[in-house]
Length: 309
Image (cartoon, rainbow, N blue to C red):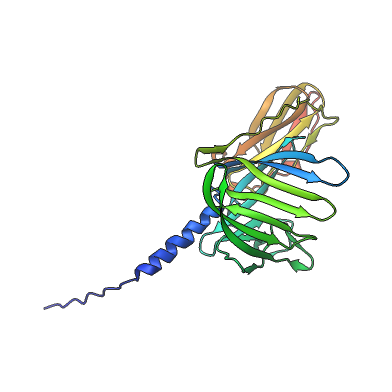
């Protein structure tokens, strides 16, 4: 007769409680796709009057970058006074609660630097910095306190950090369920950033920024094809270009062997600055992960035609 041994393993309820508690701390920085935030900034330098600006942040999706790690694409846009845009690429390690930012210009391991620790408790010192790093190495951030606060009409926890990456340093807060909430720094002048609107998991909080500034369209003074973001990419990248006058614009993509892959634009355009996304997942390329869209692989012809590669 065959005998079977049954091994039962019991885990204490406290272990599951600890795991749930750590998962809850990840809500201090919700980087789910399509989440969106709007911030106002104030700068005061005596005796000058205060200056203000505003910007938005949106999670555009995921991308696989050069170190073979998957990052969230964060699109930053100035709401006023100008309309600059730039991208950050960040990821959260759910096991350690660490937040990393990709930087392919940095001589760092895996091309990323640690910017936060969501699991940090008051009194903890973290080898991280939202401001970055220097040739002297990493600066440190201190977790000062956890408090209850009202954020955009919602009662929640806020966690206060002090980033020592520059003089005089910067105090900032993360709010559970909202993410980056506010910051302040003072030396010869004082600057404040604070959250005024958020759309988290489809739910809206606060009030969107409505500017009464009359927008004027700045006409570029030259032809320009900008570096795409991100680069390398997987599978989506954004290509930006500008033209100083109306004309026929043709924007084509070539693979690394010089073979034409697709035509993104072939139409008349008014003078201005434009952006278009290229999704390589549907392109006939054997390995689009290895494709770098560089200036010499993208052809834009305008009128004559003239090439800007």
